[in-house]
Image 1 (tube, one colour):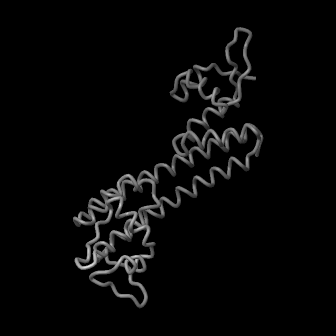
Image 2 (image 1 turned 120 degrees about the horizontal axis):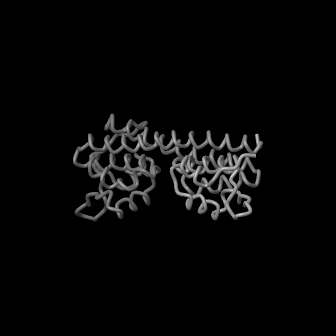
Image 3 (image 1 turned 60 degrees about the vertical axis):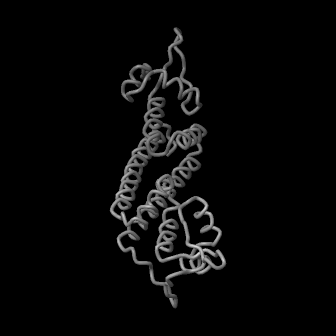
Length: 234
């Protein structure tokens, strides 16, 4: 059996030997045997674990990667694969949100709804019904500073213009994407100032990040499959 020195694996993965020891301490890589002098004796199994770990980090993050590899150590390949599936589904949902946003920005006219016409001023209930969100959600977005509705001078009730309605539709689309939450107010303000070009740029950048993460995930999955083959789990 061939053994690998820590420095050999570290050089291949462009990390320090201390990083290898950290990964061992996390319990995500099997503890290696020791030589008579105390040196670690890494095998092809350890090399496969380290390759998988480093590659998966980029697409799945540390927490998910560690959980997946702990399942692999327990020979629970199905649990590991379903975790991967869950993460890819989440990323797919983020992409769908970004795609919807771009589609919305290409045509800023509000989508037609059956038997309903857009009024110049709408109550919060009418705005909620038109956009398909709850009144509590609209109040929350107002509290967050994303919406500033007008007020009826006689009774103080909220009044929503077509611009407010467009903002609500945009927020509804963006709210499920983690990449947009940090920039939500900036995006909504850009819509208010008709800076649609900037909004598209933010959205397209987020999509690019999603594409890159997707590629990283598939590279990680490739290494995971190789690890499973080394372990004869599949």
